[in-house]
Length: 246
Image (cartoon, rainbow, N blue to C red; front, side, top):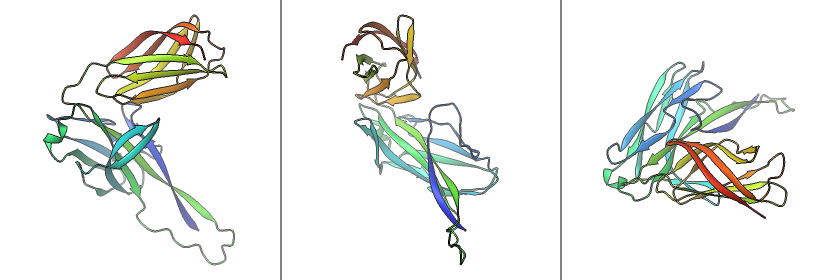
């Protein structure tokens, strides 16, 4: 029987404690660094019944036209870069800057600490006569833990919202982050009169970035005044806006 490997990428950050379906848990699920705290640690707990081999890597995280991009981050260190954690065991993974001087940035920088499960043994060849090519799927987990390097002088949260009707009856809801650090937005809701439309999931909006949700209200909203509410790590956000025509 051939063993086929697949990778499941879990982009951690939605809850206070992250656990994969197979029982891998991480704590904390977001790391913040600055000149006073240039390094931190993440604890991985293997709650499965199997030993795991994990490879750790830090990548620079940027976004262009709504798509995530990753690149090598030579200014960052991770230790250990590879390790074996027994079933029921734990491993501390440390991540940080090579130099405190690299923390002197006017704008926040974003990274991800990727923790990738590596197969301990190579897949065994298919037995002779296995014409059907029988196979088993082994799921290899990959976590992406957000790591943020705070700016030297963090600014207060500053968000600018815009909503525009779409020809199909939907609404393009956009937010521009005018601050110098990221904002994590969740429970985003656009309300007009008695009708409320919710955006799915959560989003990290980087400094200087504009992020857009495509909302699908059950009933088309009319151009005119509306209200916006959301939750952030700094507390709730409420704003008035005008829904513009297409």
